[in-house]
Amino acid sequence: MKKRKALWVTMVLLTLVSLGIWLYQGDLPAEVVDAKYTSPSSQFLTLDDGARIHFRDEGNRTGLPVVLIHGSMASLHTWEPWVGRLGKTYRIVTLDLPAHGLTGAVPSGDYSGAAQLRVVQAVTSHLNLDAFVLGGNSMGGGVSWRYALEHPESVLALILVDATGPSAWYQARRDPKADQASPLAFKLLRQPWFRAIAARIDPYYLAVQGAKSAYNDSPVVTDALIMRYYELALRAGTRDAILGRFNAWQGPGRQSEDLSVLAQPTLILWGREDSVISVATADQFQAAMPRSEVIIYDGVGHAPMEEVPERSAEDVRRFLKALKRGEV
Image (cartoon, rainbow, N blue to C red):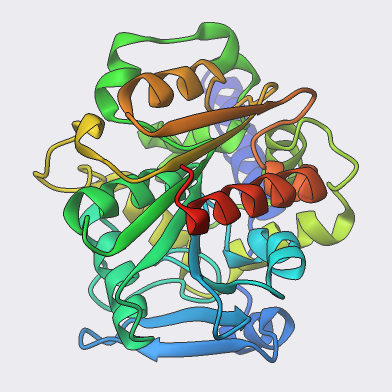
């Protein structure tokens, strides 16, 4: 009996070791990832705390400035379709938040909502942007309206693309069907046991499943797009930074989350098939914000700027033209 038990324990241990070896994936050197994903427009701003922020300042330098913030697990690359379509008329600024893209890990280890707002302010101040249109997708949308609450004098208008809303909205409404369809990585990262091992396992299949789910199986989910998410996640230090963000997230700070005080014209764009944030949230934004309009894209998921770049960029162009004429 003892021999049989010892054999069983040995087999289990060998299985776990083998599984760990099979799932293990080391980091990619930061300089290798940076060389692949920088562009001639890439710039880096070093903050007082040592954080190195990757940003791009593109388009028409004399045009209306539009600052765009990516979502969770994404990077500034998600805005490239809009930069190409809107850049002839507008000045487009994009940036990588801490724990994302080529910014990655920061020395302070601060990945809070308040730190995100400070980074947006640092980049816009560095570029001497006193007033600008601010937009964001998913988490970046939440950063955008929170920044507008904190700095209303700087934000001329808001563009919210499948944006996160106030936390109270999600406490009041849970959609089991949407939770089931959402990217597996988000669900796993909410689990302490997974966060304990996530910094060392290979995230490739999570990147594949997450992209297909978030983008509603769109044709834009190519091998290149999947590898962008995968390799940026493997950039040295980034997985630890992602886990730090999920472990320590406590919200953006103490400012009010009363969106009704936001008087800026706001364009709300949403994919009807969004598996990450329910399309019903678009109606909540419109009800809460006095000067807002909503556009819903049928058959589109969580990233309209990439899934339907022509249509979404044209809607933004129309909105910005109306803003200039004072019609919104």
